[in-house]
Length: 201
Image (tube, rainbow, N blue to C red; front, top):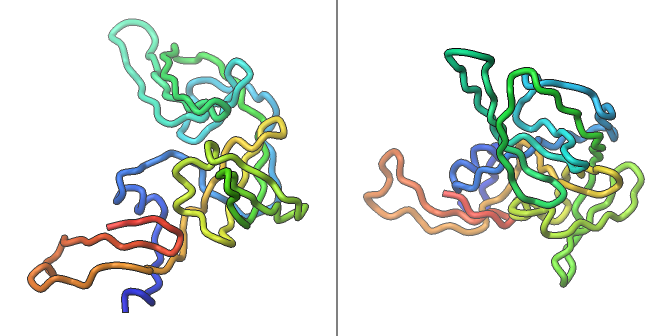
């Protein structure tokens, strides 16, 4: 029955279905890792998910486009998300302009509970310390996080700036309407509530 059915799907596909696409790096459940400190890169190294430091804040690349010109060097427009403040910016750079990568630490953690103030608590899987993360940092990823969920905490200057969920999840359909006769043709969808709290079609 649907209520007992286990489904395997990718977070990317689920976000596309629910029209809540959000760029974030996939969680990797490995030992704590750190990026190199202030490595110089240029526009040719830009890719989605890359985190660079701008004016002292970590900025993640959400999207970019290259504009070729009849004369002169090409230009690149980059959309960033400030992982400290939460706002997005969009700037245009000349080809070859330099950036510095942000030193971030990624560590595996397990979700334990949410308090009355909306703060999320995780257990660091390496140190077994409890880590508190605000709802502002968790954002819309909270609907993919259930009790015992494994995530990756991304830290910048000892502050958690992002909670990354795995690329794939195993969840249970806990509620959905029965099929309506005549609506079994290919392409028909219906809402289904998942055990993690998200609703998909």
